[in-house]
Length: 204
Image (cartoon, rainbow, N blue to C red; front, side):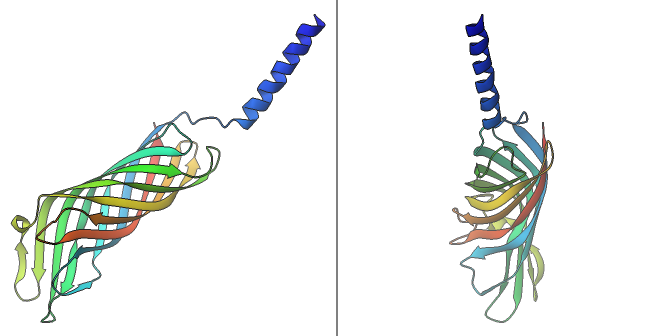
């Protein structure tokens, strides 16, 4: 009887130590929520001088992770892109491209499940579906130029950022993004943009 009690005591002790050292996995592996972004957008290889053109996006973020360090994410965004260029005559041409953009991201998280602040890096492809294109010229005015641009865009998106726990199943997602287009949106021209994106993710 003494031996059995001793063995039971040892097993309970090991169990207690193991439960303290092993981080508990989160019960919510899927999270969704709203997202907004702001930054600078441009097009590579334009004729003229590139100027600052604000870009913004809004939509839905989806995160999935069962691992402490690895996760996957996807966004569905309405995205304002394009370029602001000063041509050789000193006139500004404001090109606005409107996309439904769908980035897919592989994410690596630093830290542990218990941390309230989780730095991260992400990388992955980004798909863009053109829904409108408009050019505003100082001399010629505004015109619809959608027929001059490719209806589909594909590129690579990389980001660094962090997730901040606001409540048990609510996270503030913050990402500093850089996107570079791989496909031409018009002859020898590619989309390029960078900026800050912030979202709230709610565990399901």
